[in-house]
Amino acid sequence: MNTNNAGAPLNLVLASPRGFCAGVDRAITIVEKALEMYGAPIYVQHEIVHNKHVVQRLRNDGAVFVENIDEIPEGSHVIYSAHGVAPEVRQRSEKRNLKVLDATCPLVTKVHGEAQRYAKQEHTIILIGHHDHVEVQGTVGEAPERIIVVGKVEEVAALKVKDEDKVGYITQTTLSMDDTAEIIDELKKRYPKIQGPAKDDICYATQNRQNAVKALCKEVELVLVVGAQNSSNSVRLLEVAKTTGVNARRIESAAELKAEWLEGVLSIGITAGASAPEDIVQGIVTELRKMSSSSQVRDLEIIREDVTFALPAVLRTP
Image (cartoon, rainbow, N blue to C red; front, side):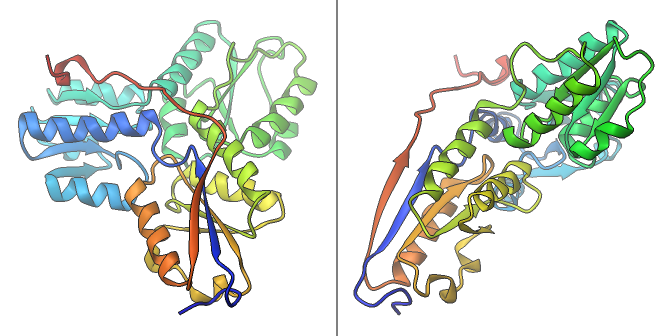
C-alpha cells in the first residue's frame, strides 16, 4: 500500500559510510574463524558487538556469551569482545588457563595505553564516557585508583583532583565529537595544564558516520538509524540526527517499521551504527519499497573507508 504522497516516488537515501567498522568486522571474523578452527563451544566475554542479530547468529554457530570469566570451563578458548577488558579479567583468564583470542578494537587498546601512560606519570585521569558502558569499565580497570569518569559537562565543576598540574584526559571511542568537545573545553578551563591524547580518541568510523548522518539530514525528511539500544555509537547517531531538527528514529529491523511514519514523507535517509549488519539495512530498504507504490534508492557517500585491522596471528590463513 502506498502510504506517502500519492503518485510521488519515495526517495531512499543511504548514508555512506554506514554499518560495520573495521573493529567490528575484525571481532566478528575472530569468532567465526575460531569456531572453524577449534569447533564449538567458543566462549566470548560479553557480547562480541552490541547487536542482537549478530550475537544470535554466532550463538547459533556455537559461540557462548558470558559476562563472568569464571563461568568458563578451565582450559577453554575465550574471546574478549571488541569493547576491551580490564587487566583483572586478563589475570583471571590466565589463572583458569584459558586460551585467549583478543578481539578488542585496536582503537580501544590505544585508549588503554594512554591510561597506562598517565598512571605511570601519577596523573589523575579524566575518562570522558558513559559510566555504565562496557568499554569504559574496561578502561577504568587499567588504573581504577586514578581514573574519574565524566559523562556530562556539568560534572566537571564537581571534580576534585590531587594535583591540578598533573591531570590528563582520555575518551570513550564511540562518543559524539560534539559531546566530547564541550567537556574537553570545560576541562581545559578548569585545568589549564591538562594533557590530552596526541590524536583524538574518537574513532574514525564514529566520526565518519556522524559526518555522514549530518549530510544525510540536509536531504531528507525522516532519518532511520539502524542499531541496538545498547549500541553507544547508534544512540549517538540518533542524537546527532535529532540536533539538526530532522525527524529521526532508531530501529533494529524492518519488523519495527510503521506505515504512519511514511505519511506525507517523500524522502527517508537510512544510516546504521558500527555494529549493525548490512543485511538488516537492506531488509529495511526492501520493506520500505513494498510500502510505497514507487521508490528510488541512492547512496550519499561522504568518504570512502579503507581501514582494516589484522587478525590475531594464530587465526591468519597462511
